Length: 222
Image (tube, rainbow, N blue to C red; front, side):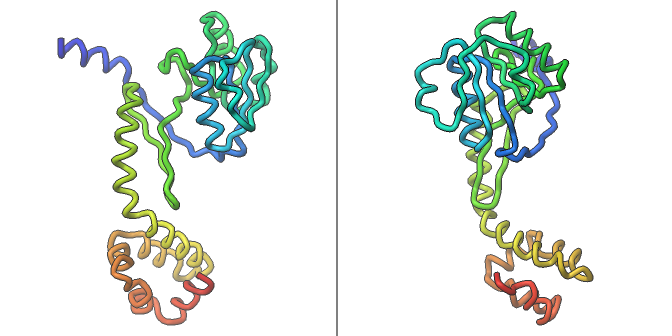
């Protein structure tokens, strides 16, 4: 039994290429008005994406959503024309396959809700702190596993969140100091400097390495 399970899992091995898309520039089209569509719609709306949903009928939960355009109609190809991402989630396999074909012909990125292995994209679990955002997926379609790992990652990254925000500000200031930019960025984006930051010795150490003049420029208006 163990060997058979391993063999089945290996068939689902896939490689991911991750991109961070700017939410308010992303047009999402969801086709279907059932539970799967609702969950996807709610998720993309929470990220401030532009969402339209096309279906003949919608479950009642859609009435509670704001900032979404609901279109009561059967599928038509023109619907996907101005969308970057399509979620295919009707309860008709023939229509789903037709939409998938249209997406591929139009070079649209699509999520096939019925079977993630037929998708071009998969929506990972996303989490955000004040200064850090991340997404995580598993290689074998285990969303509950992704949720578990996301919580573990948050616990680790929380220790770095304030430091990442702080070092990002220093990095931004360093960009105008062309002669020192590379060395400063490398210096502040390190575990050693985080240790110094945690000890509240950051200004003292920066002055020691780069001088008072550079220190003043880096911390001006911070």
